[in-house]
Amino acid sequence: MRALALVLSLFATSAAAVECRDAEWLGRGYTVCAVDAVQDELRLFLTDDGGVPYGTFAAVDAGLAQQGKQLVFAMNAGMYHEDRSPVGHYRESGREVRGVIANAGPGNFGMLPNGVFCFGPGRVEVIETTAYQGRDEADCPNATQSGPMLVIDGELHPRFLSDSTSRYIRNGVGVNAEGTKAWFVMSELPVTFHEFASVFRDMLGAPQALYFDGNVSRLFSPQIGRNDLGLRMGPIVGVVADRPAD
Image (cartoon, rainbow, N blue to C red; front, side):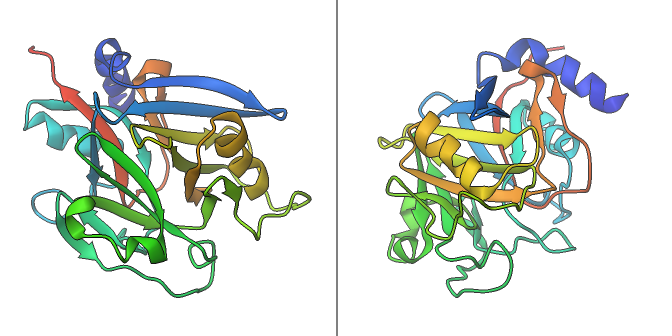
């Protein structure tokens, strides 16, 4: 009931902040949420002021309420360990929690090249990890590392196979060339990496895109009545807005 109440209470104001819509690409359904980096207030969330992982969209919103803000869109934003700490690099509002992991490793995260979703006021970027290491910290006050990259300079990740049989519900982020818009995408049914990456490159025209996760993928969008439940999350990315007066 609390989850439903959260969706309903935010529904009236969320539509103006983020545009979420259903889309179909090559016979598969997706939810696409477009965030305007200039107009929308994008944030990362990991732990509350006491260092306790948020874990849920409801917990993030409760924390925002103390600031007179509310959550109007959110998505899990990178892989995490059992204690919900990030697997890769994570920096929130200039505070670094974990450094960059640049070496290859097991699982999707270590399928190089992987990358970093980074943003600051009015700007969003997806940067391949080795390129990110050469950037000034001030360029990316907010950053979350995941992998693999989905689209790199307009090309799909070289290890993606068009005839792959590995299918999962997946989510990720892509950006436009100007760095002013981010597309957060989640598949509605299990898809391959190749299918998922093609959504960003061929349907949305994103020159850079990054995989966040699969199986645990979840979305919060009151605009379309979504507040996905499941295992507690690690890093969360979301858009906030002023909370209406009671």
